[in-house]
Length: 150
Ligand code: SF4
Image 1 (cartoon, rainbow, N blue to C red):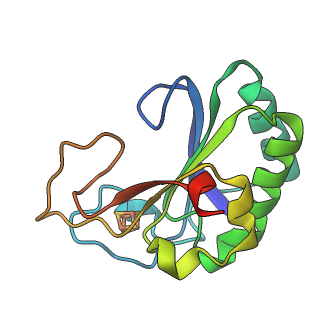
Image 2 (image 1 turned 90 degrees about the horizontal axis):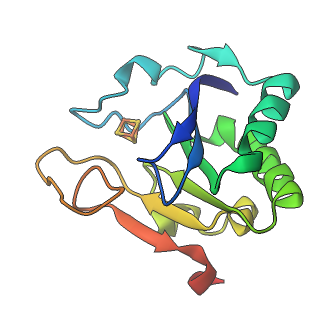
């Protein structure tokens, strides 16, 4: 998996103070996407074990980890994201993980890795459906607290 960037003092991608990782790679091709430059999963930098360790350490004084992109649930990204989520929860069982994906919840709900994700924001970005709902890019997207689906 490659990543584009991460923020260590983010208050706009989820509740509280967060570390936010933007992975590369997305096949949804939503018109109007503001991250078109990272659709190619080979763009960006390799998400090495060292980067993952640094990112996890950054989370120490934060409320949680946010995963965006690109699409963290692009099939090629799933193993690395699953491992990151597993390690995060091992280290910080009381902090939460928010994940943005272009897939619908119904398409990914079978994934075991979602057991470590607390909040899923799902669905493609539809530029003709503007929204005032927090944390979403367009009105079709849902904010799903996964604990109630387990
Ligand atoms: S799912 Fe997100 S990153 Fe992917 S094309 Fe749509 S808006 Fe862009």
